[in-house]
Amino acid sequence: MTADTPGQEARPASVAVLAAAVGSPDDSATVAAALAATVADADPAQRDALLVAAFRAAVPGNAVALEALGLPRSLAEASVADVDRKLDRYGLRGTGVDWLVSVATGRVVAVGRLQYELGDRLPDGQPAWGVHVPETGPLDPDACDRSFARAPEVLRALAPALAAERWQCRSWILDPGLAAVLGPEANLVRFARRFRLAPPGPHDAAEGDESVAKFVFGVPLATARASNASGRLPRAVLDRWAAGAHWTERTGTAPV
Image 1 (cartoon, rainbow, N blue to C red):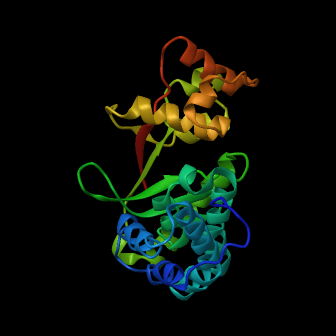
Image 2 (cartoon, rainbow, N blue to C red):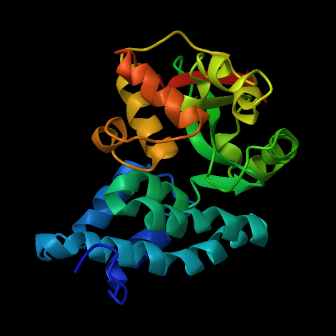
């Protein structure tokens, strides 16, 4: 039985951990550790299946809990919908337990086209709202404008203690070389121009290559490197790798 086997029954204790984390001050790593403890006695081969079942089982109740905290019902449902979307596409380990915890418990909130992460921090420690791009279709600039315009009111109402005055985004989409591949008016490039890049960091190349493999090809890095993909962006990714260079994951900020 795999981690995504249909019919796996969730443990009530696991679902309770995810339910209790909605609106709590605990960070995602703390909740993930508590969640792991609820399946620690299971056979190692079954633990991932139990965690997947717990995330899927927690989604409906957590949407209701988020609505009770002030998140409009449509946004609450859209937010937790990323749990099933990510599990279906990447599985538990391909997605990451911490991310699934963040989405399932309302630490990451969907507002229109974009997702926003509560409790993010700038390098100097100032609060920020993280910006993420879910895989829900084209990155239309007008849809992004509407999302950015609505998000502050939604986020402040949901978690006033985590209010911020800066957006922060870390993504392969912010690789400065993307414009040369797609052109200055491509949706991805126009999105990246919203942010002012921070200086490069030591992990940008490794994380960038992993992210491009995941989000452009939908496979692990080694598989992506060996692929023979077509299309302008996949071909450009492979060409850069063939030249011995890397794609970078960069961090950018913008005022709210």
